[in-house]
Length: 144
Image (tube, rainbow, N blue to C red):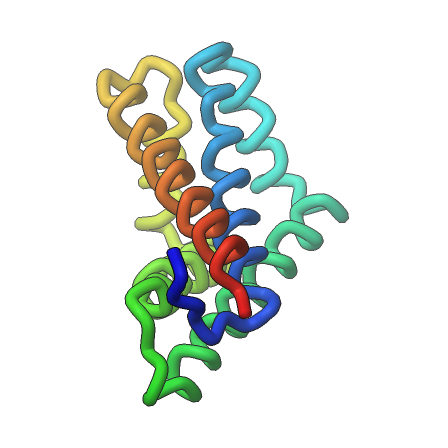
């Protein structure tokens, strides 16, 4: 592809990070119990790993949203993910941090290893991971 885009240095990192983060959910298909136990423990104990992960995700999402609004003349297709995906992630982090009861019930439903929709839920996140990682590779290859 000859066309180069005006891509900021962190944009491939945003998509590669979220791609890898969602792709790790393949673990949910390999061992439901350990996957569920690990993430429920992370959410409930809120140790250094939790805050580091939440901090990285928050900073990437905020940076993406800022880029979306500051790049009116260059609002390329991938930047719409910052609004929708980043907005969702920030809401998710807010709901988890504040203990929003409806969100807590949803998370416990998602991490219920006997959930008949387990494969659909985690397969959807893996699909998002593939999409995100692919966009990250595309952006890295097309940076000016």
